[in-house]
Structures are given as C-alpha cells and as structure tokens.
Image (cartoon, rainbow, N blue to C red; front, side):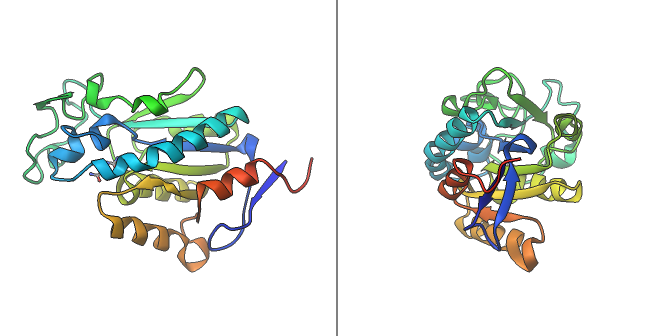
Length: 228
Ligand code: TIU
C-alpha cells in the first residue's frame, strides 16, 4: 500500500507503512522540563512542550495502523565512560553532564531526567535506542535494527530540530533512508534554527529529505494510492 503526502515539500512524499518507521528523537524530561540538560545550557525549555500534543496524536495514529516506532534517548552510562571530555567540559552550563540536578544526574541513563515524557512513553514492541551522541546512528544498533525490519523510510520528530533531529536525519540520509521531517512535531530552543533546518533539509530537491505537517502525513496514512 503506497501512501502519498501530496503537500510535502519540496514535492510529494511516498511511503509504505510496512517499510516506514516513526523516529521520535529525545523527547526526554532533560530537554523539555526545567532543571534538566537543556535548561542547564541556559535555554527556556518550556516552548518545546508545545509539540507534545501533536506528537502524541501522531504517535497514537501511527500505533493504531501498526507502524514501526523508534524512540531515542540521549544520555550516558553512570560511570560516564561513553561521555568524552570534549562534550562534558564545553561551555559554561549551570550543571555539567553527570552533575546532580532536580531530576537526578544530568543526562545520565536511569535518572528521572533521562526518561521520556509520560505522554510519549514507549509501549511493548517499540524499540528504545540509547545514544551517547547527537546522531542516533553513532555507536548504536539503530541501522541494524532498521535493516532487519526492512525499513527504508523514516519520519522524524522530536527535539531539538537542528541538533539531534537534524544530525540523525543526515546520518540516515547517508545510509540510504528516505527521510521526512514532521514540521509541527519537532522544535528547537531557537525558532529561527528550526525554520532554517526545515528549509535546508528540503532545499535543492530534498537534499536531506522532505518536510510536511503532521496532519498531512496522517491524512496520507488514512488513504492510499494503490493496493499491492
Ligand atoms: N542542546 C540541544 O539543543 N540539543 C541536544 O543537546 N540534544 C538534542 O537535540 N536531543
């Protein structure tokens, strides 16, 4: 069954549900709630919470259709052996990675801040990729998992648009996946960075991928062009 997102930019985007995964990047308390990693960097994190309802609606519809779902979480082992000094020591954050904050140790696996927000909690059968980097393919089994599932197309959502989402989308593009970024299901601490990312991924005939609103993808999901 081929679904067509006619309103996608820069052109119509086609996908088959059985070969497409919804990738939800780093919807963790550490990025969207006060007291976490995002806030420690000096960001106002609350605007990011605005995408949760659209993302939740999209996730529920995708689940209902039986689509593959991948959740990612950025974070480090408690002994921080997977956190390079180049990452831990940069900048002048209020709290560094590994320091104790109001949601536990910043960006450390198993801590309260590392958890995915309750509205988007993974359910049985959905894979969770724990990643030490910004890109979800670096030092993870994501590519192997997607290959084993026969996945060729990825729908990207989550935070932040120009950091972990864009990095992962570029990694995916180079690995041969056809990518679409869901415009209202991703956000940045910097609105102009989000806008720039949307524009740069779809420029030059979708040099990195396509973009579309969640409602456009969902209406394509509920209709199809042809039946195999
Ligand atoms: N700081 C920031 O904008 N983002 C990250 O560090 N990680 C993710 O984007 N998930």
